[in-house]
Amino acid sequence: MKKSIINFREMAEKKEKIVYITGYDYLTAKYEERAGVDMILVGDSLGMVTLGHETTYPVTMEDMISHSSAVHRGAPNTFIIGDMPYMSYQISNEEAVFNAGRFTKEALVDAIKLEGGTDSVCERIKAIADVGILVMGHIGLTPQFAAQMGGYKAQGKSAGAAMELLRQALEIEAAGASFILVEGVPAVVGKAITERLSIPVLGIGAGSFTDGQLLIYADMVGYYDDFTPKFVKKYANVGAELLKGFTAFCEEVRNGTFPDDNLHTYLIADEEAVNLEKLLAEIE
Image (cartoon, rainbow, N blue to C red; front, side, top):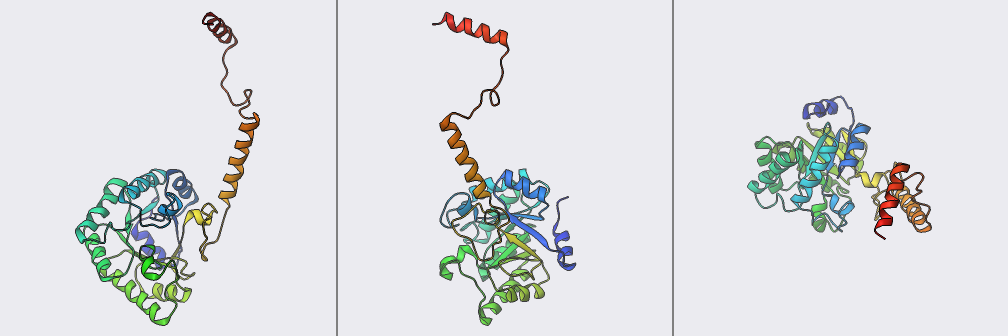
């Protein structure tokens, strides 16, 4: 059965780890559900690992709705979180609520995620939570703020920076978020935040002390190879297997060994084959 926010709170209280993976399409989501993941994040990282953009900035609400809908069809019994793309919530509370509502109405996601811990983001979180939509906050290495950070760099590496992240996390919780994602920080910072919040804390590159772990699926299975973050462990090499299969197909088509008409084509009755030859002869 699909887990609920109550289940996730209980898991955090009992120190049972929450398993969280990104997914962007029907087939991947289907296998993730079969594997028993607790949550699937339809992240705006799809802009890079699925759509081929250099950053997450070009991703639109239409992209997110389409991919979230596909993930829901593939994993109907898994808790799904839709990522609010760049400029879908920054302008106003009203626009943020409208776009969050689109996720729940059109894609049937169970929660949405916003990046950042600024005062304005906390306002958006409160506005969305106030209409009954579950919200996940996201602090630390936040790709939508990468320009301000000078790139995709680890955060919270000084005592002052770590305390600022803790302050943001507490304000996000106070604004009404149901959980929070902490990305790209030292393990001691992930631990400090987790110990001081009463909502579940998920981590990606935030050490082992958080209530659960997230990875981008294309990184962890060796599918996306443009670069690999330090915190990624590869559990498979799908890219190599795809390349092997595609290369073999190219070779066999070109040398005529595929398709084998004894194995890969449909049969016709001998009588019908004779009739076909007669009909063909009449038009020659």
